[in-house]
Length: 310
Image (cartoon, rainbow, N blue to C red; front, side):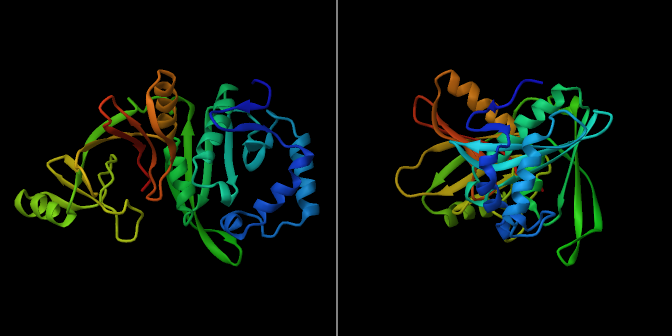
């Protein structure tokens, strides 16, 4: 295992230091951050100071918990924890990101970095669990390749109520066998009148209308789930077309579906390194997709994203 710190695309994953106490106390004292976690907010500064000291003096690679600090531009934005089993072949992962820095893909990037370190030591399985209501964490784990393995109903007494726990697992041999990163391509037609287009595709051509993520489950979202405003999806016989209402000239965009956020990041690094015109780097969109955008020589927008978890 290499020395800390480790630099990722945008972050520094490092050991905790005494200077982290104030930032650590602040984000762990945020009720929204602590909502599905095992601690109560606010966190007393004295307790936070003790924890940071324990983190700073812990031995990486020793059985038990080791907490990695996650830094962005000199600012502590969160932490990732690994609990290594006594046999050094199994581990458990947990993560926390400050609310002001959520939605930027930092958790995916930091956890992926830590997983790379852990699996490089010979660990064969990493487990994770989260409150069933914590859909953001569940989506993140699945984007990283974790498989949902079960649910423990009313298993944890947390903050005055019984909660359901979702169980996830990632095997070393399954990390890079998901197949090609890009598994589907859909045209995204820019239309002037979404209602008229839906009437044409749904009424005249018999396409099913709704919002549907192009994932292996081919699942239509229920009312109230996050979706892209002004956009619908029509499908028939295994073919999907995205329709997005926009003013001005109408052209075509392409949407490339990718299995995991880690693969989106890998494509971003590969294509940027080759000089591709990256219009927007990867980040989590309001409708739940982890997406980047690039332009081809004619200005066609390629949207490259990983699907959300169910």
